[in-house]
Image (cartoon, rainbow, N blue to C red; front, side, top):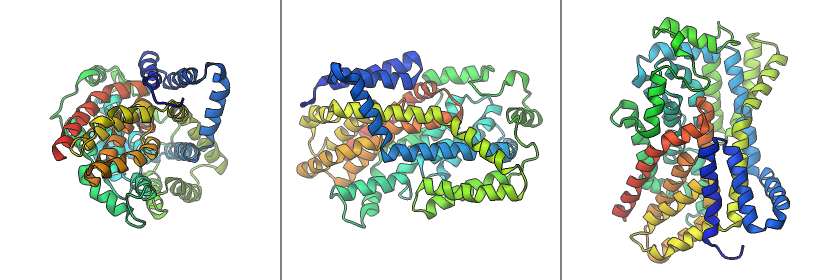
Length: 460
């Protein structure tokens, strides 16, 4: 396609409609990609789909994501099998005194693990879901709290994978000089309005100031009435005392060591965070180093034979395949949208409204729509920053404010899109159906986005 047209909007609408209707995000994304390829060249759909999928599988980001997610699944399997996760569940249940305190513990844990949104989404959900189950908190509410403290928190902290990635983009596009990327990034942090509002919004929901609304209200009522989501404890058969709650957790960890020690949970997670920071916020190297220490650490304690550890790690890797498959399908879909010139169409359509006063708000709106439609919160900005930043300089807009708008849109897309990597992993870690998670958190994300849009207009 040589010129961007409104036809490029068809595939995203197809994907969103099918994702809600079929509740099968991978299938919806593949059908959306095929629909886009039919628009490009009906006679070469099969060949073009094969080329797009091979291109995606050769992408360094996809390779990194497969290794990180799979290895994290392997680590989680070890934490569960050795009884470390069970020990943490026992302790956390005794500390949490009610629904609000269990959700607040989840919120605080999300703030603490700020290094990477993947690490955050998988760790917090997996750690807290059995605790919130005790108090009949829906898995949808848990996934919302996890997702809202993943990308939004990582965006606001300059010591994160987001800061490293976007700092590099700012240098590559001449926005920041070599060695000044992080300082330029930090100057934009006060203007990352969506991220701030998303974190404030979820805190208000946790403490009960903002009530459950829309689909979330329905999910919470179902959980309160003992209709648990998939993989939740059957609370119809469980009393509310701590003794019975701990028994319920032990039943869920059927194959775990019932005498597991808390340090077998806390030491590997502490190592993961420490190694990730040590290796310049590289989660993959952090995971490798953590596994390299954790395996001997467990072996010395004679928790299980090395062959059994390997079997557990392979099973853990397999458990992450649905999440990995969804993200791979989302990248294929994004590649097709790029071929249809979707980013250029959205920018061209909105460019007449881009004045110095309106530019930050319009950039936030346009990039949020793109990130939501394509499921790409990083890749889309590698394409659009070379367009947006020169435009900002041309109209005399505040650079820090425009960067803040870009990062706000990125965190919105990461959180709100039905098939973004962060949404997929938050649902996976929380044991929640992906589409249910996306639908229930969307009203809160849209409220924060609307307030951010107004905020950008006022600040400009």
